[in-house]
Image (cartoon, rainbow, N blue to C red; front, side, top):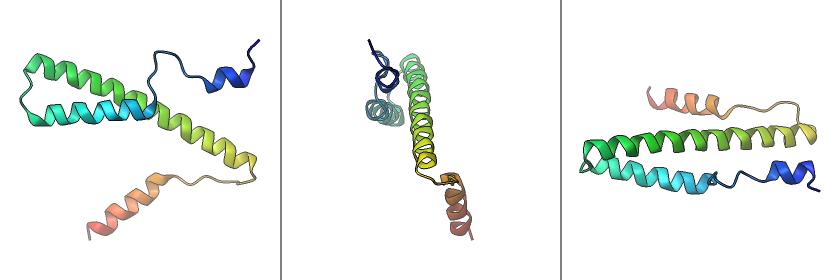
Length: 95
């Protein structure tokens, strides 16, 4: 009998891991940036890239949620967003 932990730690068989998705996405971007892809193939490549982007975003959200749970369990009361730091850096560089 499988425990709840075993089920939640496993990803679906057809779901590639984050690193594989990111590597494939980078390859697709390079292919499209080269500009020598026929239109129909470029559209298919772009569509695949959108799907990979969504998979990566989902994986990152899941990882963030796990970190937040771990921080909460360890007594940390608040989790700061990384987005705020990125916006501050962008504001500083533009001045």
